[in-house]
Length: 123
Image (cartoon, rainbow, N blue to C red; front, side):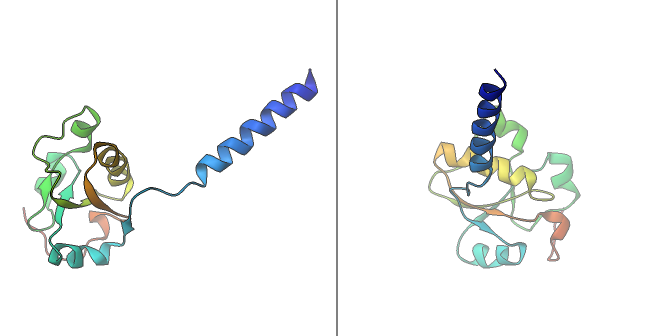
């Protein structure tokens, strides 16, 4: 019984490590590349909550909270628009990117977030 348990744990651990090592199926850029993407026609998609967005966001950004996307709300997003997905620190944008990938949107994820943004903001 102990050998079987050890073998099961070893297989589970190997699968877990393999899953953690997989890279995302989308591009992730650095915060200093956002303006370059905007110049190339991308729309900044800020996935923070409205109260956070209202405190300051990248000029021209569109707000679409992750919480809505998690509930299937993609209203206002266009499949023929390219997006730069950003949040406060990079965690929510990564989650939003996974959802957008599943829905077939064209986008890049930002590794950092507004906490690292040094450019202009609008309120």
